[in-house]
Image (cartoon, rainbow, N blue to C red; front, side, top):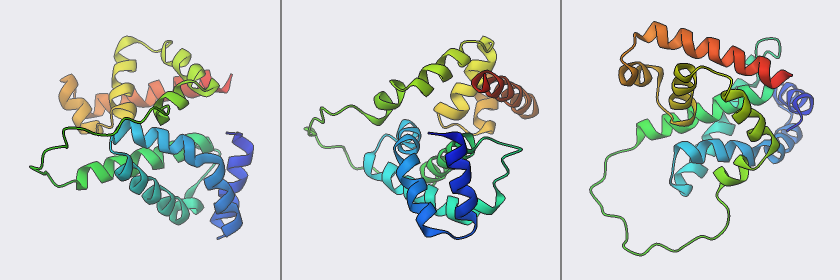
Length: 178
């Protein structure tokens, strides 16, 4: 994902450019689907969340400010939020899963993303965080927990959790920008 290309496409989408939206989808959908699939394990529901993500992106493109966030990070945030929103809207079901589900031998979106250079860089940068920072970031961004859920699970005040995660994300951004 070329940062300048994606940023330019988002700017064009903010002007209601449908061709730019289509191109942005082509360039980013696989990675955003991988992010969503990591949070939502059901492929059909992950596809629906991806659609929600792009609807949100179309509506919010005007709010993108490249001086405040990298385009890729902004898109991942929208995808993550769409996945979490979909999980929260789920209704509990009592139906049992089928006993024999077909086996899909193709690599999962998570595995495909994990093999990418960006994922290797991100993993290396995550290794530079303290154990506490890494744990909170992992729960919030890869586990799909809200800040409140992370605070409750860690036994820390919500404000502290938000501050720690914000500082950790700033460290990650500096590391990834190198």
